[in-house]
Image (cartoon, rainbow, N blue to C red):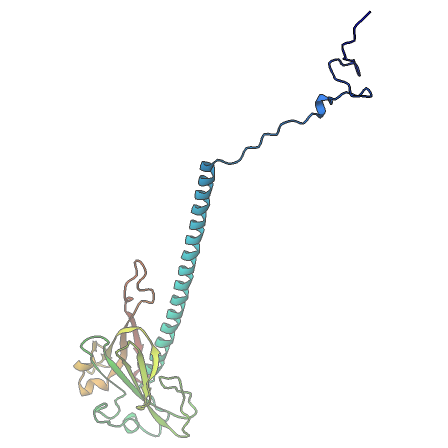
Length: 266
C-alpha cells in the first residue's frame, strides 16, 4: 500500500502545490513580473548640464546685447550723416548765392549791396566774417538780393515772401553748446547742426588782380579790396563723434573740408 505525499502532478508538472479544486498556485514563468531597473541622473551630471545651459544662455544674451549696440550705433551714424548732408547743403546754397541780385540789367551789385557799418565796409561786398582764436571758431556772413519769383532761399530754407526785392543777410556762428546757427537779417537764430566742435572759414581771393584766385585767407587777414574779390569759400568743420565713449572711438571726427565757389564771381 502506497503512502500519499500530498503532492499531485498537475498539467504535467510536479512540485506545484494544488489549490482546492485542483488548480496550481504558481503561474507560467513568462507571465511572472520581471524587476524593472530605473536609473536617474547623478548630481555631477545635473551640475554639468546646468553649467552648459548657463554658458549657452550667457552667449545668447551677449550676442543679443551686441546686436542691440550695433543697431543703435548704425542708427546714430545714419542720423549723423543725414544732419551732415543737410548742413553742407544749406551752407553751399547760401554761399553760392553771395552777391546775387535778380536785375543785373537795371542796377549794379554796389547799388544793391551797400555799405553796412561794422559788417560790410565796401559797397558790393557780399561776404564778411570774423576769425575766432579758438573753438568754436569763426563766423560767416553772406548777403544777396532775392525777388519774390526767383526761388532763392535764405539759410533757413525760406524764400522771399515780402512782395518786393529783399536783401538777405545770412549769419553763421557756433554757440557755446556746439550748435551751428544761422540767422537772417538779425532775426532769431535757427539751429542747423549740433555737436560742432570747430568752424573755420577761409576765403579764396585774387590778391594780384590777375583775374585768377591765388590764395586763401582768414577773415582777419582780409583787406577791403580782398572782400570784393572772393572767388570761393573753404570751410573746415569739426564735428563731435556720435559714438564717442564706445571702445576705440575718438571724441571728434576728422574735419570735413568743403570748397564752395561764389557763382557771381565766375
